Length: 335
Ligand SMILES: *Cc1c(COP(=O)(O)O)cnc(C)c1O
Image (cartoon, rainbow, N blue to C red; front, side, top):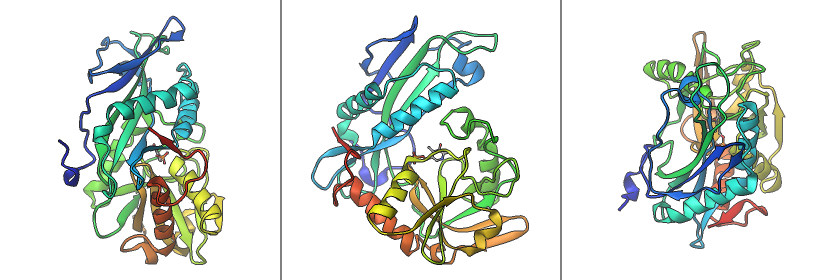
């Protein structure tokens, strides 16, 4: 059926997805369907004005043979925050988690077996479906959850190379802190330009002063300083990554690693020994260097793979997800 050794980051259709509709001020019961197609008016708000948002999380086969979903309640909460910002109707946390678990259960044959560096990726999303021409929010919506098996994000032996972007990802009081589709369409051009120059991704700076590190288009950035402290850039326009939040907890509670969350100025990049990208897809991927037109910064300990601190965090984080070591209460939802 699925050749686990050949999994990529491409979409593979699985047989079931969850669908629910919002009409006349209320969500219907929702349920599983086999149809992967969405039929829309040409004037639907999602097509005209990008009223769409999403989430992303993973299910694994654990060392104990369970199928587990990692922290779906956290995605449900973040989804609620995003919905508010986009004037979309709330989708209750328990219903969100239930829809995720139902979809994973229905597509459990696509969860990669234990021991393979892969997962079942889960994509909940919502779109505004009403036809509009005036610039107003939709009053009808569709919520969907589909799954697709996903290989690992970072496969190459060497570390990633980032380019400090001349473009901005998020305005100071904009939508950078929520998972709105509109944040991603506009990132294609800077990302493609960086890739054309031989880089893996862009590093965005804060749009106001252009001095502080924000993130890449799809993952947060974390650093380790020369004393082994985990330094996590903070800014309201960085998307609050659940991976990042989990890594901070693991550093403090499992590994006794000091963590500092603060704005990180791009002038201090030379002080860091390790750099990594973190996110559901990236997990913790090593960054070897960051370039701008006037500077080249190398992270000595993560120039060829994760350095010692990020490797320890990665090992513990993935061991928790696979039930190889005990997870904090409430992190794993059994399907
Ligand atoms: C989703 C996302 C992340 C990672 O968040 P996780 O919850 O860890 O998957 C980071 N940055 C951006 C811009 C994102 O959209």
